Each structure stands twice: as C-alpha cells, then as structure tokens.
Image (cartoon, rainbow, N blue to C red; front, side):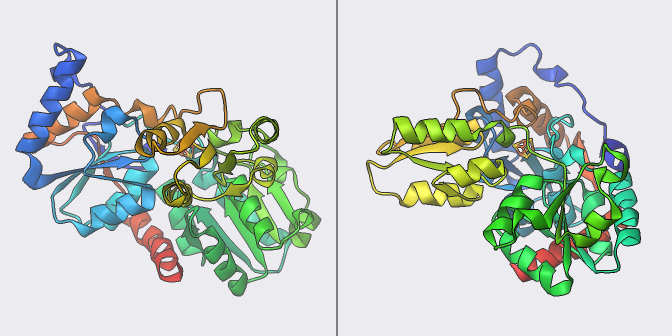
Length: 367
Ligand code: SF4
C-alpha cells in the first residue's frame, strides 16, 4: 500500500524523546503544541486513546476530520488516525498544506483487504460475466487508489453515516452494485433497504474468480467484497443475546461494521456519530452495551456519567493499528514541524488524487 505514495522521511523514530519519561513526553507535547499553535492543528479520531485525544484540537470520524482539515488555513495538520484517513485529508487540503501521520505503520486491516490490482481483476471478471451496469461504491475506509478506481468507473465513496443514501443513488445509476471493502456495512445497509440476502453474493479475492460463477454475478443485485474490520467482526450474536437475557434493561447498540447476525440481534445499529448522538440524547439513567471500538466506549462512559455505558464484549475490542499512534510519535511529529521539516508527510499523487476527488465530491453532493 505505502509504495504508491510519497512520504517524506518515512517513519523516523522519535529519537529526540528517548531520554524523556512518559510524564515528560506529555509535558513536552503540551509546551510544543502551544509554541507551534499558529501553524499547526492536531486531529484525533474517536478511536484514539485519551493519551492522544487530550491533544486533539478536533475529535471526529474520518470524514469530519478531513473536512476540518480542508476548512483551515494552517500549513501543518497532524492526523492522529490511520493511513487512509490522512490520505483523504491530504486530498481535500491545499497543495501548500501538509498532512502528517505520526506513525506510518498505523494502517487499517480492512483497507488492506482490497488492493487496486485485485479490484481491477475482479472488475474485468464482472464485466465479462454480465451486460448489466454495475456501479462501484467504496467505503471511505480504503486506499486512495481504490477511491480513484471508483471515481473513474462512475461510482462514489460512502461512510457508515451516508451508506444508505449513496446506495440508493447507485441503484439509480444501474441495476447492480459492487460494494467494497467491508462486506458487513454493504450487507447490513442493503438488507435494511429491503434487498434480500439471496440477491447478494460475496466475492473473495483470495479465490479463483472470487469463488463465484459468471451466472452468480449476472443474477446478483449486490456484489459484496470479502473484507471486514477485525475489531467489529469480533462481536458475536451470542454476546448480544446473552446481554439481552442477563440485562433486559440495557440497550444493545452496535456499529454496522459488525456482522449481519450481530446487527440483527442488537436493539439498534448505526454509525459512530449515530451511536454518540443516541447516547448523548438518551435520558439520565439509560443503559447501553455498545459494540464498537473500546477507546470510544470508555470515553463515552467517562463523558456521560449519569448513564451506564459498557462494552458489549468482555474482550478488549481495540483497534491495534490506530493504537500505534503513541505520545512519543506525536511528539516527534511536532518537533519536526517546529523546525519546518515535517516527517511522515502523506502525499497522494495527482494521478490518484484527481479521480479520487471525483468520487469524494460525488459523495458530498449526494449526502
Ligand atoms: S476500527 Fe477497523 S475499520 Fe476502523 S481503522 Fe481499525 S481496523 Fe480499520
């Protein structure tokens, strides 16, 4: 994934903070952030730990943060999130702004489940299998080269908040839909729109022709890519049912990246912003078991102390790639920015950026 993009001084270790203890690192970030305030902004994704979130000027989901980056004039933006998020922010910002990812190894296992070569090959197979029009829709959690593929082939990007609207739009363009890389968001949204499961097939890029025949492609209304989020796929319908049996007073709410069975078993499902709003707007005393990333669940519990908010899973549902962004890496980023020699700058090349922006702008105009 990374070899497609230019990153300046890739992944330099935070050598200058080696001699600092953890408390000194935090102190140093605070002081440094103050010094470089006029030229710099820190963005923090909801799934970051509090150690990072305490320094975020803005907290949000990937699209909200990318839009924030595009709305400011500061030359440097440190994106505490994962690689595809920093790419999106780079595409939406001006050429003279630089987006930094504190640790280049902060990727997304879902985004890595579909690459351009696989999608190009699958697309040729689909075109040879059916004469019906297929509109490609990609979840924003993918590399920029896949966003470019979608832009070039008449499709659009979606987020978990606007997936329904974008899929409705896609079905106005043609009879069939290719949805990648998250099979669960695609399946859950399409089912919610009234498309039966037997009109959906799953294309597995690790199998010959995705494990599908041309007849299956021709017959299906929706082709789902075999991708998933390892954090959200970890929740099970058994956990939901157990909760409902043991704690009937608790609302089970999950993210649509969870499996179909989990979403069907839960009381409610929705995007990160939907979950946050639902909890925020609930009356005092409400109880929620939440099926999403643990840092967000813990933060909601800290924020809304008049409500009971717990994780749906007894296991640690941590996004380990997101967690790679640690205070020492943030400090290294800020130190480099102070010297106007930023490290780990994410740059999407023009030939990928332009078609990707077509797909992004399509999404923004539809939703
Ligand atoms: S939570 Fe899942 S989809 Fe989100 S960044 Fe982590 S691995 Fe990717």
